[in-house]
Image (tube, rainbow, N blue to C red):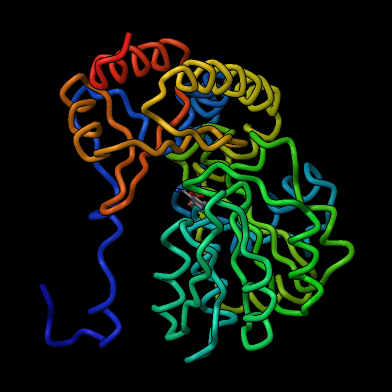
Length: 349
Ligand code: PMP
């Protein structure tokens, strides 16, 4: 559908909702890389404080208290942190601040689809650099294209592959002088972060989120860390009052209760190990080793497998026209059910 008011670029875009499978009813949700547990301590703290929220007032315009809290948590200064309504808003703000019409943005592919969509929205040109057959960065191509590009957006560990790229490669890209956006939405599950590189490089933005390891996707809060200069530029275009008071309070509690996140990460890594070992025994699937809370696997006839899993009550992520599927690491029970259903569908014992 098209309205007569559309910008031309809209012909190339689809609503995000048409990409992801929406879960309904009682399906086990293993499609959106969510944490399978709710942070109960945070919910109780929220319950105790919600009546004190001055909801007739606007929230603090630049989220300075939350920024301080995050800055302290990661060991940087307030001026190095910007918070968004999900890291989705951070990606949009990077586009708003830095992409001029026809600017080239390097995007290794496959990766999170929003990077190229946002690049197009701001009339930039996504330069898609396919990953190698082992799902690694194609460094030669990236470095040669970097000469003509303004920005590179690197998701590490990457969605949907789960692969963490070597720090040397990120540094090599940074050394070209272009703006490097390092999306660490799944960083906590990998044990690595590029945050210390911020001290060395003023052309680096690291993005993080509370949606995954902290299990707070419903409160829509993400942030980025960078030099004072890039953060100041982004602050000029990010919407004022972008976080609501409930989310702000919740995230503050979540940082106070970071032990929940650490414990959840530990359990997810255990479950990921179990899922990987069990899937490795099935010769019909080819696995990509994962540093995230999901596993990508190649399989014949992915659409059929996806549909058969839905019939058995499990929703995973299907990608139109691709040879792989992605399954999120859920509770141990979710993993057991997934393995048993997958074996049944593939007719293996
Ligand atoms: N980056 C990546 C790689 C993601 O997979 C996602 C969520 N699907 C996001 C960013 C956005 O996360 P949020 O807006 O919930 O912080």
